[in-house]
Length: 431
Ligand SMILES: Cc1cc2nc3c(=O)[nH]c(=O)nc-3n(C[C@H](O)[C@H](O)[C@H](O)COP(=O)(O)OP(=O)(O)OC[C@H]3O[C@@H](n4cnc5c(N)ncnc54)[C@H](O)[C@@H]3O)c2cc1C
Image (cartoon, rainbow, N blue to C red):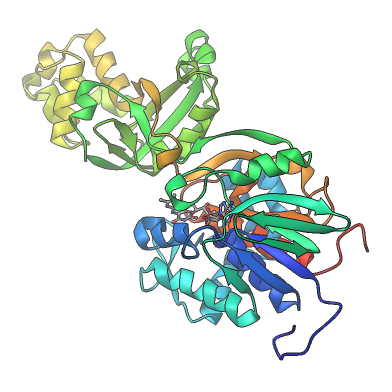
């Protein structure tokens, strides 16, 4: 049935599994193109992750272009180029403006609704989908999918749904309390898809020392966190070491370890290692102050070298942190009394602090899931499976994970839109 009540026999039946960011957009796009769309969601409401995102402010995208978005996804960026290229950050902002949600850009480039209310973002997407004619089924947890002749059958505990095109947008495994428990991996694997090992990303780190735990709550606005392969770290001269990843942003000390954008952005590289011990995490606590300048300040004997090491370091860092670093290096002296060895230890502790990492807070506290459906098995223009015709896969269930800053919603919107458009048309095998 079309929106004006006329039954269109040629319209495609589309089922979308998961009413998150990707699913709401996919369903709306398919319905806007005349498809009969049913959107199935296991929760009692749609967009649960949208509602809690960005500290309930929802950082919808990043103020950049398609290339800037792709660069936040490492190898997954190439795959995203096509869908983000046709529906980039400016298009996302326009979509929200058209639905009555004004946006603003913060100094970090993060784009938020002007109201700072994630519920306005969720409501706009929901309104857009329902106005396009999407039928939403809440408390409808899908238990399996199967191919039935040239159609798909989607089963839930209480009903089954048949369709021509099936869009899977059921998300990853992070924050499982939101309903994202990785259900689709098993169905898609059964159909022949490869599931790249899933692991927590954008997740707080567990580690550090007693003295770093004691600094819990302290934030540094500007740090550079880097992760190195341990073997290379131990065998190469410092100037020859190349980090696996480096991110400059704010850094938060917690009672269990570290959090904040810089720590969370590098966490996916840490969880990629076989053992946490295989990598080394370093933090430059004062990236704007050169190593030479720190050395010079710690060897400045003017005025008799009476200034204490803590006072010197306190010129750049909060006094609590300066005191802790000096104590951890056993360097509580005046500059005049500071040995060359301790001076080097202090410079290292500031410019390249190495913190042991024992683990992460896991999927329970990960903002995204790294790993998922292998990208080479999905058409990057349409999100159609290269393994099963009429099956479309979009959003976080794919093997894509980007930095903090709105990149992940952008990827969900772009891939969701591509899937919705393609699913409303005959599948590649019927064309
Ligand atoms: C605390 C937190 C804050 C975040 N903040 C931001 C942010 O500000 N900006 C940003 O870009 N990203 C943010 N993210 C990441 C972002 O939320 C995700 O990348 C994005 O939601 C992925 O969209 P998706 O549609 O693929 O999956 P989801 O939004 O996770 O949606 C999947 C949906 O599928 C449903 N589902 C799962 N299994 C089934 C089933 N068997 N049957 C029916 N339905 C099912 C789930 O209930 C869920 O509603 C945040 C994540 C978290 C956890």
